[in-house]
Length: 57
Ligand SMILES: [Zn+2]
Image (cartoon, rainbow, N blue to C red):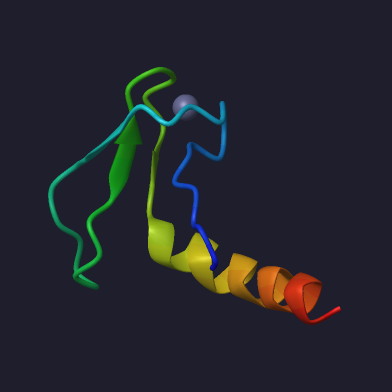
């Protein structure tokens, strides 16, 4: 089972809230602690490769 942890890339806080809607359909998230804004889809694509490789190995 692969568990995706949604956390701020800047301060690793899990206190996030969805912030509107972007053009791609993926809602951007904003961190309640450091107030930085980011999208999850690009992070997931980047992390999938590393996660799958670790499980296979
Ligand atoms: Zn943060």
